[in-house]
Image 1 (cartoon, helix red, strand yellow):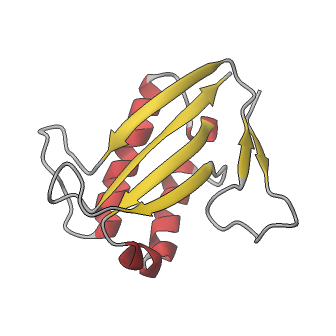
Image 2: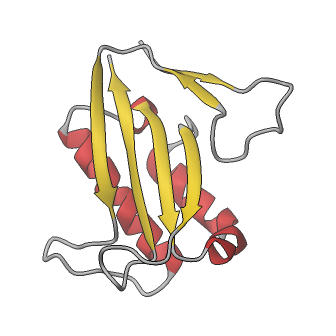
Length: 132
């Protein structure tokens, strides 16, 4: 049983996200916000792509530990301290996403924030997944 991605023809074609996800599982996993923290609790990477890659790795590590896979993601929110920089590097961030999580995109939003909990953090990802 997988989540169904819905992208109506009456909406702009989605790139790197799905407009809607119909959850078909029985267990919901809520994923805490993940930044580019390493196992020592220090932010790694001094560029947005490097931090995005680590934050996504951390999110997927938590998901897998709960028994899920990237295809189970129903919703992800990206909090960025600079949306203009995020947009400018969207191609590279998309490649990082596809290499780590594949092409079963969840419903997503990117939100600009003034700062994150860790002052050096440029990006944070949270979300939820629905497992079979």
